[in-house]
Image 1 (tube, rainbow, N blue to C red):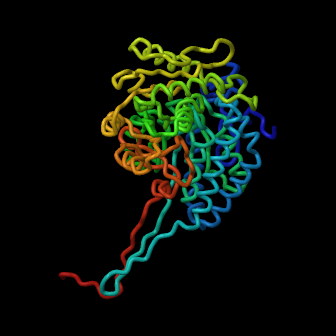
Image 2 (cartoon, one colour):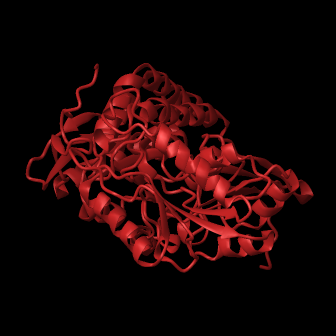
Image 3 (cartoon, rainbow, N blue to C red):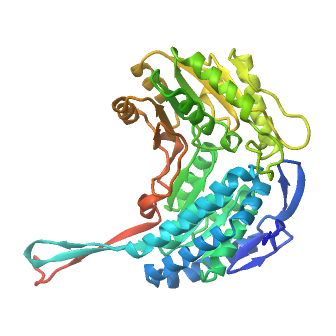
Length: 487
């Protein structure tokens, strides 16, 4: 490996690694074995202050550069990430426990896609000329917000560091990124790569820490924008704190998304979509379609094929082995949370048809788990589990399943499998969710907006929509004649 999994220091501020061992220790645990692979330290007030000052001092000169100049740096960083994909993928696997088979094609590569996309978009961030009556006219200017704070989740640390950093930097902002304390390593390498590729010091800073560090960043007057990926309860707290300072926000929160499989669906594809929407990343994906509504006439066929594929194709083991396709939970705590939901499913009368148990031995493994005969009022059908637990619910007609699918406080994602393309669009149009799929699930190309409605968040990440959330528009009226006044 070019990169060592042991970080050079806990924080990356003003273009260099910085350590302050006075901060609370953060042990980085490899989920496949439970071994401690690194020890970092939470940011002290002095570290936080240093990061905020560095970002504030560097931002205006960066915003004054042309979009072409900013974009060139981001595109160089994208190329460098792709060159280092193997090393970054190994680091992501060590940080999260996700199989290398997955991280090598999803994590650093999608981060590079974001850097490339927004790097290419940066030169196009212009305003418009607006002709007005009497020879007057106006124009608009798209301006940077200033200092942005990004707070990451533990499931996609490299990707999220880039999903937030790339549009922020493209628009002329500075970024202070706080990774999850559970997976703190990868964002440091993103910062290192950006600065190695020419990003001026102070524009992408990484500070480690627990909730108190996040609160200190979000509540600071030097911060203009907050972007969080996390749970709904955390999002509400961060949103409220940001609102006190009238800061711009993007909240990408949790979900309990519906995946609807109609009687005319291609069952093999539908099973594949349900596997991607429930067991990829060991089920630790916010957009997962964990309420799988299956038409009653094909439910048995669906369950038979699903269980057969789980039995024959799941390879659980060392995540660094290329053959492994199912990894552990990110932590023992998360495994305990998931097991508590499995026990609730059993207690409330759901029928266990696959999995349901801890895998004994090293690491934080749980079997891929499927419940059938699930009803809408069961806990496993209402609350986000964030683990490999699928709830299969039968339905009989279109209107019924749409109403049931929408009967949730969440609105992140939704999916439909059917050969009837008219029905597919008709149903998707009625589902209350921000990121939807037809005959597929959990695709997240950078060209498409990603985000939710209702309790699942505000704002959008990726695509041109993200630009709106990392910039603001100034309008200028120009009078060409004399000013008339009443006196």
